[in-house]
Length: 210
Image (cartoon, rainbow, N blue to C red):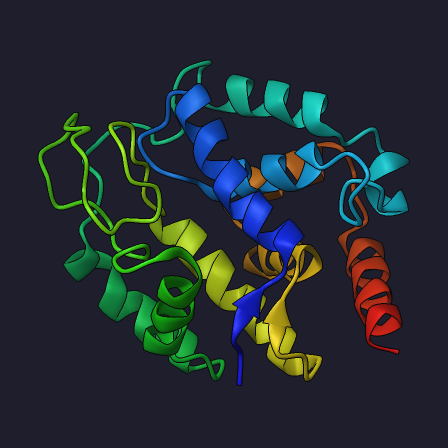
């Protein structure tokens, strides 16, 4: 049974929120999660040869995000989807690969507090505090549907490796498995060998468990 995030994984999720705010996004997108993983300069993800040999680091990815989002915000045009819009589609898609979205929600809330997994239902531009959310306070930033999917896929990676925790490597593996949006574009633009990166991260997880 999955129970916890490791300290580096928790730090990455928390840091992703601050980076999303800094980059003027109203949601935590997968590219913010990638940037947070790379911001831990000595971490397993940031030092993976498949990334370092292609020049993929915090500064380059930050520049890529700014370029890809027009230098402001990662949400693009249009209104943000609500929980009702996204959860049923997400649940069915994840169910097909053996992941229970409700179990992921419960795991997130055990680690980060009640309501951490939900999207905002308030009006656009409202930054008022939402008690019990992942990051309480004026500038609370929720998970986007894409980030929710990445965390669900990180859980799947942990289960495939028969591990009862989510580490930073699992989150990066979740990003690779999702393979969509700006994150996928950034990796492709830098000619990252994602198969090699997956192998490196999987090997590091198995070495930790040995």
